[in-house]
Amino acid sequence: MANTHFSGPLLYSGKGASTGAWGTDLPIGVNLSVVQVLDDFTGVALDATNDWTVVKDSGATAGIGADVQNGVLDLTSTATTDNDGASVQGNEIFKATADKSIWFETVLQCNKVDQTEICVGLTVNFATNPEAMLTAADRIVFQVDDGNASILCKTESGGTETSTDSGVDMVNDTDITLGFKVSGTGLVQFYVNRNLVAQHTTNIPTTELAVAAMSVSGDNLGTRRTRIDYLFAAATR
Image (cartoon, rainbow, N blue to C red):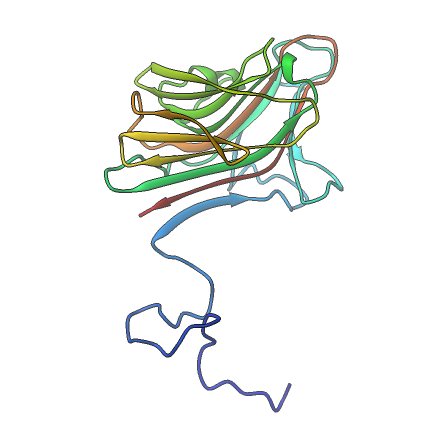
């Protein structure tokens, strides 16, 4: 390597000489016009100090799964305990704003979909217990209620909710991709497995929201686990 020299920064593949505009010859793949959160859960332990706030019941756990392909976050209830679970939430940095967009996506699965409450998406921060995400006054989320595997699409502003059944049910131990796009302050499009399933134009919150996910058991007949492959959100600045 001693005889290898570069006289300037490496350009993107297919990129010509710099036009003089700042960033056109930036030697890394980054878009500073977009802010994003992406956690692929590839570490050894969940960072509950700097990355996530964990709200859980005493015996429940929120942690990175050991030796799982691609890395996962497991939200696991206490065994044989009803209404027990865990959640993670980030900092409130995403806000629906005129002429700007927000994107959210996750891949997850659950071992008992009709006996687990699941909620994932963007929400105001909550405290005390993981179920508080279900009653947060401002949120844009996917939700699965106890006793029913249906995936619900929800926007809620100031405690007033718009809810649409996606028409898709979760299946035990099967990955599903959930995503939405917020366009300005007047439209949220919900996608399941990257297919459009619902559009909301009402009750879209315009306060700052955080990436969050929760899972709570719906019966006392076993251990309920929701496994999350990744959590991703991005927004134009």
